[in-house]
Length: 191
Image 1 (cartoon, rainbow, N blue to C red):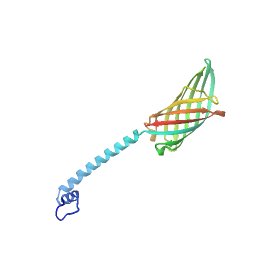
Image 2 (cartoon, rainbow, N blue to C red):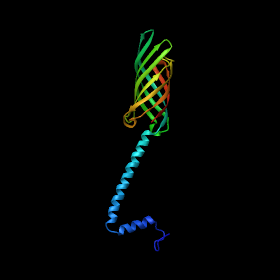
Image 3 (tube, one colour):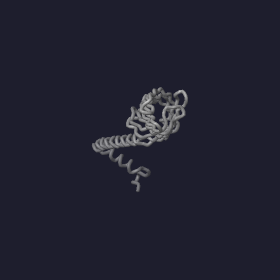
Image 4 (cartoon, rainbow, N blue to C red):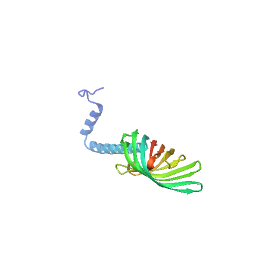
């Protein structure tokens, strides 16, 4: 119910006008209100930052790499060790800011004995901003020969910059091509 002579004004506006007219009370109340507002803003910013860091992101990438491997005969099989360097291109993502390319370098070890394979590696992918993602790769199929390959998993181990604290994994499939080239496709989920 409006107060006579103040039709159309809200109670908040009327209360503010009454407080502004009383001396001493309005200044201390305004200071108190500002402190509360600052605390609420800080809480909201902290909450938003935590939620962004924990938001799930799904994406798909394609990697083209050139390998430089050395192989030795070992215990009835072969051991291959070397580097794989290439370009990772994120082609689909639930977070559009991730779309783009990164340079990737992996140190890889492949042990192939009879029909058993053990492929592992440690990798760093560096994006255009200089931020790094660290991950390990594991695969139990294929070797380094042309035409070989198979499916595996990449497990994130953190990073720098925007990737600090990243966790999650990618399921990938790799195909080794002629002249030490390979191509892989991965579907990833990170937090």
